[in-house]
Image 1 (cartoon, rainbow, N blue to C red):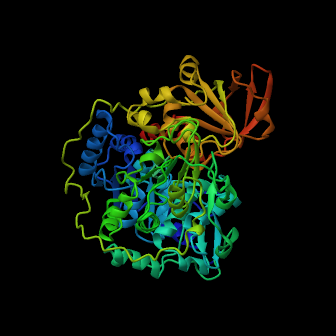
Image 2: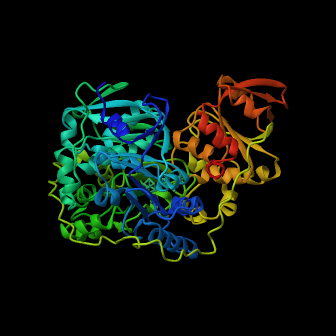
Image 3: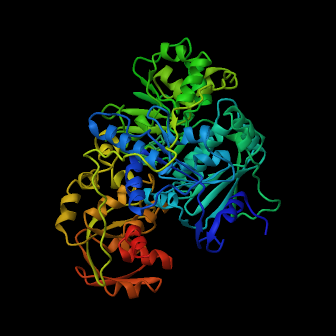
Length: 638
Ligand code: MIC
Ligand code: SF4
């Protein structure tokens, strides 16, 4: 059978299992990345695994999320991460160096390799022809320790790009069009593989915008071929020798196909509070905007920010708008300076932030009450910006810059012909603020007082008795399960403290009620746990005593995180049973280990006196993991 690019990489890295969609496979992971908000837990877990050095070809630890140092916590975590990296054989990317996904493209990504990252936007690397996937910190730690990464073999959705993009229409509009068509759960269980004549128009950073935001489709990953465009990007980065070609085998088999005619696209925008609520910019024009934020791992390349700078050059930002710009990396910032456009950007009134995630994760720059913020980012979930009642819209950099000038949502096609984009100046920095590990595993690990030991779960009991602590709706995000932002993020290495914020925005009494209960359950609708990879959204509920989540369907990474920490994910056999459950119901699952041997498990609702069926959809291995109370216990037993 002729293989797609995805299946070629899977076959090259297959350690266990059969390459059939839906079957559990174990993959060899070549590279890993972590960032500081998920990294402290990941490295505490790596320490717990008791290895001497990482076993991957390359592992990198980035500092990009928790860069506001309002108190000692974040700085302590950075110091911990730097010391662990040095000792265990991991490269360390210093604070200010940039967003993990952008820096990884520039400095490390290799076509055809596998990359696992403790961040849901790791598929950015697909822009360079890597099979790059997000996962919880524990899965990344296990991969660093040289063990396989397990996942369900994906289906491959071929995305055919045909035609040419009209002026002012860009990569962001392509992925927004796919979100409009496929929705935030349209990619679950799939890898999106891009092809067709239209890809020849797209540079690596543009491809990376598209693969980055494939995360919002719920996709396992997204992948572009590695061609001459990829080669010239690597050449610009001084690493042409790492280029290798990747393309589908002739006659490759795809499970599904969609075609996007680029010539028919126009500037698009995602409306509050979901990345798939997509409309045309033209349809919403004249919407007053309070804030414009340009940056994030989706749209912060040299190309994006050069375009923005040229649009703003010689002009002044509208008095009603606050414009913040965060470059994706130090390299991008340097290139803007070298290309001579930074002065114009500053003169226009843009507030320049450091090269980091910044406002994208609510690390500052919260919009005003009831405000409208237009962002080039990838997520617009309610409250994520730090302002509960703000309305966040997502768009490309051209729309953002045009709007910053006019004060109301503006279609960039009104700006006349688009500026020419010169090639990026060659970055001359040799060490790139990347600290290589120590040659041997020496060096002290430096722990601050905010780093608390990792809590462990207990094995699941024979008979599970749980109280429905919360009944939530469809598309619950991990931001809703456990918020981020400047106040909560510094607690990422302190589970007892961060657990107080579980479901805080949905129900501030949740943490207290969970602690009082003698075993809790959460009930959810479709696509439960979409969004961030943060395993804290499983670890903190586990700490509060949550034993099971019952939902209509789950997002991939969150479901894996639940299992990793011994929380049983169950899917309603009949979605109508969801409607019949109420908060406070007491549920009992008798003979759990025995029942898990079957596909279907019977649950009794003691409060209301009825029974219903759920599916666990777990492989044999995962049943053992969840029974043991999580992966760390399971590993210890094996
Ligand atoms: C996000 O965009 O939500 C984050 C913050 O990058 C997360 C990781 C985290 O919560 O630390 C992600 O996307 O995985
Ligand atoms: Fe950082 Fe935002 Fe990208 Fe997450 S989505 S990695 S917070 S820039």
